[in-house]
Length: 218
Image (tube, one colour):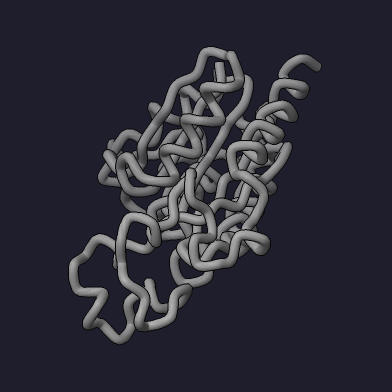
């Protein structure tokens, strides 16, 4: 079974990209949304020293149990402020901390795919952070995918009068906000001219999926 985890907004780009890739593996899969969990941060309390399980009962142990039985992992998360956002970081800090005592590394059998999502179209900082966590947990990274998502500012209702709206990081200030200007899986880089836009993101996701399937067949 392949486990998919996303930490983005419900029903938005992180989850959509994750589910698209998982669906095309042809494998049985299970999806967890960190958005639904009241995840706490790691306090380095050492309560997990001998059990390799967190003493905080907020759902993280159940996910780790599934990962211990899984054959692969696909993790999707958005980038905030030049790094992976806090919920994904809180998850991985605890998973890595509880797993490394006495060199246990219970997830080292896993291989995985990382999907980073960023409003400006460059999620390399999120992918960098997640890659570091995978390395610490000794999870092999098969491939990474960089996806453009949409700033929450596209939906807030105040972008047209807000000086610091994320919309204006990619569009000129006189741009009309309409469905055609909102980035999504089917509309990557709408702020660029057609010849400058990235390759069809579905083609990239499917190429990554083929790498995952090849790894599972080994």
